[in-house]
Each structure stands twice: as structure tokens, then as C-alpha cells.
Length: 395
Ligand code: SDX
Image 1: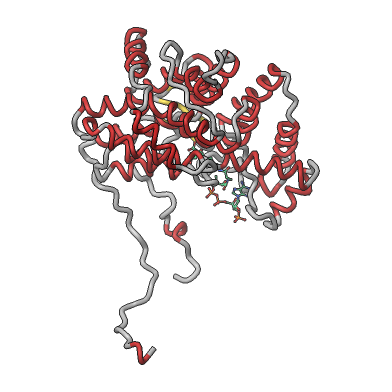
Image 2 (image 1 turned 90 degrees about the vertical axis):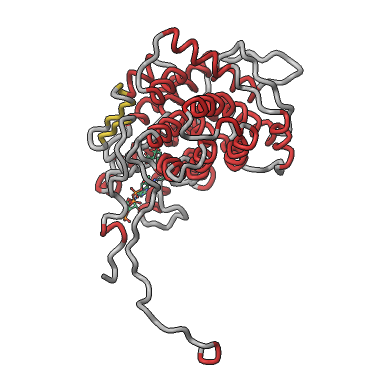
């Protein structure tokens, strides 16, 4: 009927698949990977161990983790021809399209691991992605600042290696700050999976046509780029900078413009969630981390103060309370990334780095499910009824 939207017909919320990977209770603010609460994993696990858990379903024994770590270490290098791939991009290219293009290009260099039904090929492409995406991400950053690429140093852990390739220089040794390693490791754990979000559903949809894993993940990177999804962490920082610059830090004035939908985005970026109608459990952990890290670094970032005042103002406002809008995973992450020295445009790349094991886990789960069929969402046709062709002279 006129006026009804697709959501009214339930098209926005139909259950799309069965999965054993991640459980979310949006009202209670619960998030568990393979049954383990996110709070425990963030405190006790590492990103590599959590990646293993998401992909293989169980926490690894020490020998399983060592073997997984060593396999990944052996694949951190990019093919020399793939390194030249970066020369073709303009200096000011956003790193997210560079990432999605390079990930898709991996399928041209590693044609021996494309068959989604060959377990050995799936293992090899899984390890290649986990190992090479951090290298690609670091090179996308180096390209954007016109600095030379550093080869991976496999004596380092995954996160240390990434930080060194990102911020290190060939001319001098680079000491990775253990505070940054721990902070980034925790943030990557918190971003590692989140059930059937937009980008994960995209990975599953593309994978359902039996496209290879690299193509599926590349599609997920592109879906994540949108400002309503992973691109929100960049949009939050830009919003906080606007409040500082254009509103002189006056969060009340900014919130009123958002409520009146006068503001261009008419949204508090980093607020709201389709599933969480309570505080995003990840945001709680990240907010605490932001405070600790900035204090630990002796960084007094006015944007963190604006973020905290903005949260306080919104959580006391009926407009946000009625719509159950709370800070989500993206609200505080940007302040931490900025304190680490990442430019705003790298924030969503860091989200992709974290979400990679979740995407891989879902693609493997789907392709191993014998009931999987090619994705084919139904539609509600609301267009013209049957009519005959009109000759040009009669139009
Ligand atoms: C992520 O799905 C996942 O799990 C995603 C994610 C993951 O880990 O993969 O958690 C990561 O994407 C987090 C979300 C990051 N995006 C943002 O922070 C962008 C700002 N947030 C919104 O755009 C919005 O809240 C969404 C996209 C997150 C959710 O949108 P919904 O569920 O479709 O909500 P809606 O657009 O239907 O809005 C309902 C109402 C509307 O008001 P009315 O039209 O009824 O008057 O709430 C309002 C919206 O205008 N609203 C907001 C708002 N979000 C929704 N108003 C102000 N600020 C906001 N942030």
C-alpha cells in the first residue's frame, strides 16, 4: 500500500542465516564469540588467539597457537609485483579502496588457493589473508604519506609488525610502544566479529555464489567503508573536530541541530545501533581504554573531553532515550587511534583489520554448510503494472 516501506513488510529484519560464531543480545548488551564473553577475551586473550577461536571454534592449545602463529609469520610478505600495484594509486587515495583492491588482487597472485571446497586451499587463503592484510594496510598508509615501504620483520608479533611497518623508517630502528601494542590488540579483538552486520552479510552473500575468499573479503571491505558502518569511526572524529571548530566545543548547540535534523548528517556519528538498544558492550571497554591510554601517554586531547560531554548530554536527552540511542563501538575508537598517531582516514582500515577473522569465519561456516544456497533476497514489487510500448512519436 502507498506509504508503507520495505521495513513495514519486515524486509529489513528477516533472519538471514544460522550461525554458531557470535551471539548478541541487543537489549542486555551481551556479545560472545563462540560462547566466550567479549569482556573476558578483551582482558585475557590476544587478537591472534581470538582469530583462531572465531575461525576454528575453540580456544587453541599452546602448540596449536604456536603452529597458527608460525604459519601466519611465513606469509606476511607481498609478491613484489603486488607491491608495485600501489604505485598506480594517486597519493591522496583513501586507504580503504586501496585495501579492497589489493585484497581482490591477491586472487590473481595466489591462484593455487581459490577453490572454496578444497580444504587445503581454504586453509592457505585463510593464512595468506590474516598475514598479508596487515602488510597491505601498512603499505596503504605509507603510500598516502609518500614514505618507503618496510618489509615485515617476522621476529615480531602480528600487531607489532603492523605498527612497525606503519610508523617505522628504513633509516632508523623503530621501537614499538608496548602500550600501543596492547591497546591495538584489544581494539582488534573488540572488532573481530559482530554476527550478521552489513559487511559480514556482504561477505556471505558474495561467498554464496562460490566466489573465492579474496573476492568475498574484498566486497566486505567495500561494505564496511560506508559512514553508517565502519566508516563511522572516521565520521565520529570529523564530527568532534567540527564541534570543536564550528561550535567552539558547545555540545548543546550541536545536539539541538542534530535533533532538529538541521545538521547535514542529522546523526550523532558513533551513536545508535540496529541491534543494541542498550550500551554497546564494546564501547564501554573502549571508553575506559581511551581514558587510560591518553592518561598513560600524558595526552590531553580536547576531543576526548568533547566526546565525553557529548555522550553525557545525549544520554540525558529524551530524543536519544526514546530512540534507544547509545554510544556504539565507533564512538571512542578514533580518539585512541589518533593518540597512536594514525590519520583519520586509516581508522576504518583498522576496523577492517579487526573484522577480518570474523569475515573469514563466516565465509568458511557458510561454505561448509550443506544447506547453503546462493543468496537471492526476495523483493516487494511496487512499480508500474503491465503497459504497452509507446512509439517515440507518441511520447
Ligand atoms: C557499526 O550491525 C552491526 O553490528 C554494525 C557494527 C559492527 O560491529 O559491525 O556494530 C558496526 O556499524 C556501528 C554503527 C556505526 N554507525 C554510526 O555510528 C552512524 C550513526 N548511527 C546511525 O546511522 C544508526 O544508528 C545506525 C545506522 C547505526 C542504525 O540505524 P537504524 O537501526 O537503521 O536506525 P534508524 O536509521 O532506523 O533510526 C531510527 C531513528 C531515526 O529517527 P526518526 O526518523 O524515527 O525520527 O533514530 C534516529 C533516526 O534518525 N537515529 C539517530 C541516530 N541513529 C538513528 N539520530 C541521531 N543520531 C544517530 N546516531
